[in-house]
Amino acid sequence: MIKKILTILIITLFAAYAHAASKLDAIKKNGELRVGTTGDWDPMSMKDPATNKYKGFDIDVMNELAKDLGVKVKFVPTEWKTIVAGITADRYDISTSVTKTPKRAEVAGFTTTYYKYGTVPLVLKKNLKRFSTWDSLNKNGVTIATTLGTSQEEKAKEFFPKSKLQSVEAPARDFQEVLAGRADGNITSSTEANKLVIKYPQLAIVPDGEKNPAFLAMMVPKGDKVWNDYVSNWIKDKQSSGFFKKLLAKYNLKSL
Image (cartoon, rainbow, N blue to C red; front, side, top):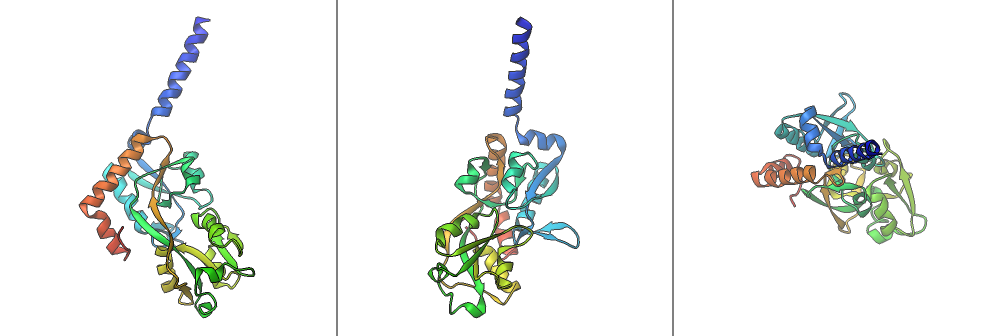
């Protein structure tokens, strides 16, 4: 009986220790920072298909974090529909920036924010007279494309209750449906929209202003206060040092 009680106690203590152990300890011990990223969000994280290497604002941030930790960085491919699951399943220690939503916050932790953006609709430039406002896209017979698993997918239900919503799965993207004429519009971050209209001149931003101001942060395991505090304090230090200011200028982005 005593042996059984001791066994249960040891198991309980071990479980409590495992729960209390932080990612920070594991990262330093393994010498590697595993970063989940989609590689399809210009200019935050983009994967070059020719080299399979990542580049972008968030990639620079993660490289800097790994350097300051004194470890190597390993980028782990993921998709928007599985990016949260990657954190909960321990496929990576941290993600590149995502929008903090109540649904995501139920199962994942979020660091302090370091970038703010608005949401805007994109349509074909030739259709701007027809779709010149948000309300003009909220009508029967209008199709709005969204990318499965993104925060915009949820917001589209709120913004366009009368429209037909069409979710596309990665590696396809919502704006590609607009380009192909299969959708009348899509919504995305103002950050990405400003890049897309340069890359695809046939696209245009609906000139009706931004909605849904949102803040970006990195996802970390929920409940790991040590790791979350470390990264959050690191972000604040880098903001004070001017690192983020230089990075914003490099990618021609607005500051907070």
